[in-house]
Image 1 (tube, rainbow, N blue to C red):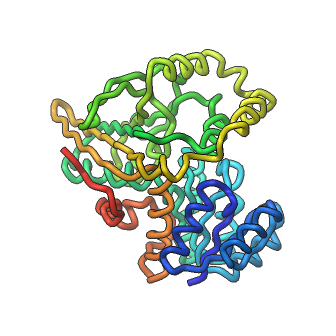
Image 2: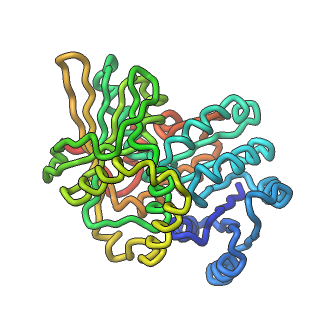
Length: 347
């Protein structure tokens, strides 16, 4: 099957391109920035195309010539809808690397159309949300009647890419999304703080809006879900201030100012940092007085994203897919994450 990687010139897009080549795949790369895409194509000896998602004719032309697209151009709340609709029209399988709650909900609403077209729509094929989705289904298998699910993750020796940081800024005014009795609700940023035993260490953690608020619900049916990330006192104070100043974060000029500050930082963690870094995940399922916990360790989130997206794309290429909207664990089960070297459930 022919693969198209859109947004290939971004930090994570380049990692996915490298992993695809490592696996013997020669993808077509694409994006809006003509100079960067041409330079990358020349460097990697790949076919390429340059177009914006607003150019529907060029988008459909590219998709008609490919069986799978890995969509890497965020913030996905602005780009996923156009790409997913075009994939349905062109009958091209869709993967992306988003962690944005709204995108999971948007694409879930397209599930029937995708099923009719015979393609799979899978947002969140990277660190967001492959390991946490598998962890959620793992807990559900241990407690089928669970009513509450809490998930958390933290990075050891890692940092955010510019793209991820910009995505967080884009949705910062919405506060923290949680799921209560199956419905989405929001509360101020920084209002949920807890302490978590990740196994090798303990750490404070703060509640965040994460894709699992959608995906874990669809994967497990558990009605009450909240997600946390490891943090420290300084970060928690900043998030609390963001919660108090959410009215300012609604203004685009404020977001643009913050994004410009982000642009001054490195594109993402270095190879050395990624090789040394690990992600630790923790989950808890509750039903009344009964509680179970589980933990998972994976490589650095960006490394994992490259590995998991190419792994899933390779499965699709072999005909191993389920048409319609899918989460990673819905399509491939809780042990999908264990197919990636360096991962494992721990006590």
